[in-house]
Image 1 (cartoon, rainbow, N blue to C red):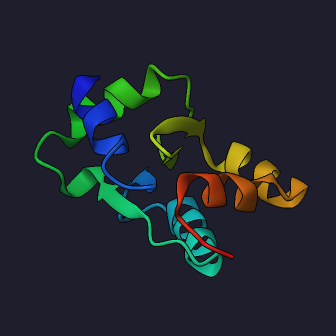
Image 2 (cartoon, rainbow, N blue to C red):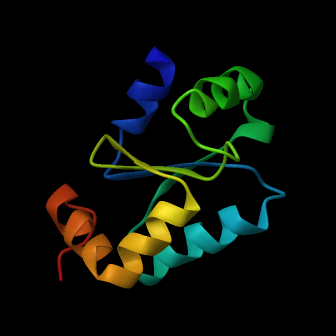
Length: 102
């Protein structure tokens, strides 16, 4: 879990993903459309991807990806991110984390 925490704190937006996951691609695209440049870790291409996936699932995400961190804080999976976006709260979080300026 320490590895996840370190990775999650390296950039304003960090997404743990899989290269073959369509929902992961949709969430990544959402962040790009908001003007953010997330750091993306594709677990199926990471050396310790299986370990990281297990650690992320212990956070309560089901399925295990996508998992989003903003400002080093665990936000959640696609459902949480979409809810924040639809409520207008996602942009606020991105601004507070310094991921976007406008």
